[in-house]
Length: 172
Length: 182
Image 1 (cartoon, each protein chain N blue to C red):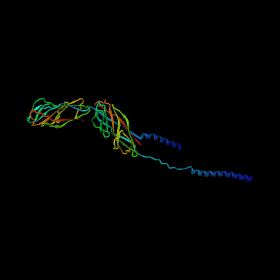
Image 2 (cartoon, rainbow over the protein chains, first blue to last red):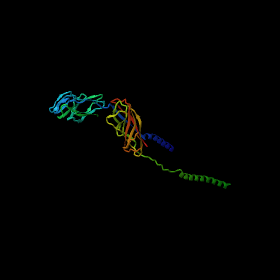
Image 3 (cartoon, each protein chain N blue to C red):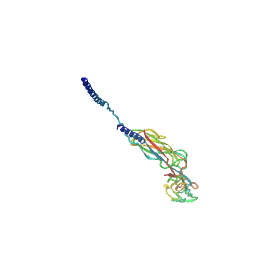
Image 4 (cartoon, each protein chain N blue to C red):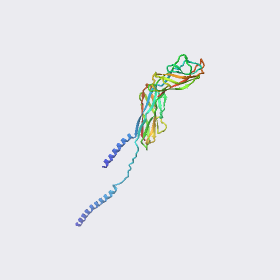
């Protein structure tokens, strides 16, 4: 009876020892997710060109994303020369939407830019230029640009001005 | 002769009595020698079972497609390029995080292994930071403090992309964290 109990005890101990090592360690799989896409690029295909407007005249001019120039304040007027909307080709990401914004308006020769407009991928113009979820450009989509400029009237005939602003495109 | 016979008879009777008496005495004496006691202690300790609970996988965000480069993510979730011309482009980046819990009275051994590539992206050299400590690369602790109610293990890793990953695709290589009682 005692020997039976002893063997029974030993066999329980042996079973317990066989089970315990499993409980002594624990594992956890970790996944390192990584996605791939094409880097974002901006390629300017055209700056804005207002053509020629009235010299020595404090006026404000606007050019649309289609390249049409109008006077929005003052008595100055578009006179002649080719007018061109700005154009930037945005390319790269195929799997992410974009945020498009403008800023950094910088005057030159008494001409101050403001309130840029833009039209992305053939869509309607947005003024001021601002997209929060523009579709992924993939191989390339066009961003057309317009702007308003205010001439302070000090611009002599035969002179030029080249105010600037900055377009920023960001991955979402 | 008769007396001798009587004496012999008495002797015969006395011998069995003596034997019986010795037997009884022997039984009494043996009874004391046959029992002994010894205290035996059954030591037993108690602790809480070890558990690993993953709270976050690693996320490198999005990097340059079709570019053979190697990227590293730290235990703080910062992604850098360690070889090649590819770069982190966009998207949330996340270090891995596992909560280790259970034992209050035993140190732990922590190790990593089982690196498994996926979609041409091969993981290696995982780093880890246990309980708010500095990152250890490669991830290896031999006497990590007992986690008790729970301590975090943050994880980083290096992945090498073969350059065959097209834009818009993803990869999910894996590795295994093993935690063992000491």
